Length: 207
Image (cartoon, rainbow, N blue to C red):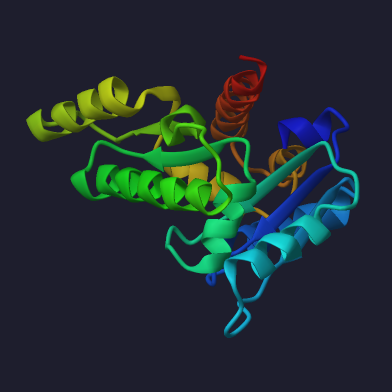
């Protein structure tokens, strides 16, 4: 939303069968013509190359930023999406299952780059957004946090708070929610954190 407020043209491509990104984005897209949402349904017996070319076709229209939401699996649509990306973002909290999910994403990225003959090291394209847990982390969480920062490298962090769910689940702008009587503080805090994270991620393209 930071990019949309700045006037950038954003293309969102939702490959996740749950369609969470689409459900969140469609009400916003109705208010913001610069935000475009596309779904790419799986096609039976379709090769990696066909999905890769299908993504290229979707991206023929000029946009400033393209964000692709994957399901975190190794089917050909996900691999094609990873192969076409300049940057792969994987959120993770200090939980073993989530850290293993980052490792799986790294393996899928390696496979995708091999498919297109790229020699770019997968670790150079992967960025982890660390999700700080609620409450006080235990000893295992400290170990997982250290692993995230020392092995993968975290570009930034964001707090896992109830405000995130509330913020993302609204079908209205922050200003409209406040006008309707909602407490302004959680929304504004979340907006500041999201803008900071966006700037950190955008900065990765400048290195």
